[in-house]
Amino acid sequence: MPAPLRLLSAQHSFLTDLHRLEEPLLIWLEHTARHDRTAPDDMWRLPAGLDGEAPRTALINIHRALPKQLRQEMYALDDGRTVDGGNRVVGVGGSVLTPLYAVPVDPADIDVLAELLDHFHRALAQQDGYASLRCLLEEAGDWYGCEYGTARETPADVVDRLARTVAVLRLDDEDTRMLVQAVTAAGPGGRITLTTPQEAAAIRYLGLVATLTRTSASPLDRALARLLEPGERNG
Image: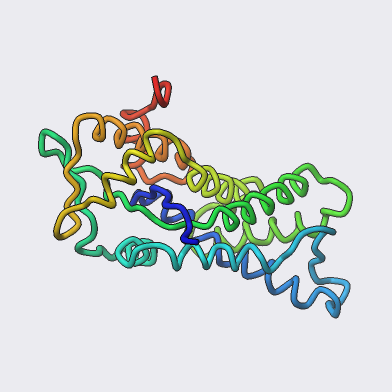
């Protein structure tokens, strides 16, 4: 049975989060799970009930489900490359919106990431059995700061990246379902011409994604978040 279609956008803040989750965070978790039984005392230990291998598998599944254009845009962000082509979303008055895509995402993969998020929150709360996982989050924060030339990330910053990603992947309402229909009916060359209700839905959706990913957003995305602050989603 095919996975249900989820609406995803080419907003850079979302794609950056989706891309940067894997390394080092989910790779380290997977490595720890595979070596936990034989690891020396100074290695990380995973808390009971956390499958360290499943989250990376889930993320890889999501990456593979992305249309080629969206996947290329995600990988191009870190070196500043631009990618031509892809869906072109046009409003009623001719305005061009951020590209939108309908992506088959298995809900089970989203659930795996959400379960990991729950474990991370327990680590942030310093619950019993989670000291080693918190240490992993601290070292991941150091890695992100060094790799991307930014300030050192706190454990909460690292967890927030996953929380933002899960929040966007879970978006499923009247607006997203309406836009999935519009995207799947795209014309030649990926041109998507929106009706007035669809354009309004797209603006609400893009504004919500910009708001959800605001803490990692580029200056442009932060400006859009202020301009497109959503009210009631279906009001």
